[in-house]
Length: 198
Image (cartoon, rainbow, N blue to C red; front, side):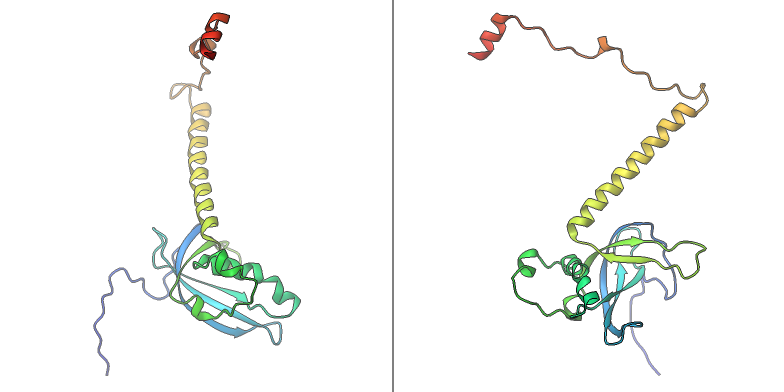
């Protein structure tokens, strides 16, 4: 027999799926596990488990695998991905660009907030899964700005399209202002120029 006391407010039930569109998101790394690489004997992968903290998608679970850096050619190619992972959880260039090797393990990540880019699975495509990749805090900020600009541009495009293609009785097409309505620079005499230069 067992007994415990716990608050289950805002806890998503296991197995529930939260759809997230293609966008940058914030998350917390809840666990990191190591596995043998499925197709490369001797190679390892780290499997990251995330709980999404981005507003509107809180509590969604995602995971990703990242090949562990080793001496092989393929193992060296993932260094940039690991650099993004480390910066994603808060390590700085000053900490990473020391000229010496650093030891990286699960303790560098578990329990830390991070930044990810989320790509949703393709509906109706067999073996299609959500994809997340680590991004830096700067990349998160830039991509959020681009997302907001894209939404604004999309809304503006929809409004212009509705105005131009809609029925004439609903709205008229925008008309350019006549040149007379635009303030023109004042002509200055040579005396005015002399006074300005004094």
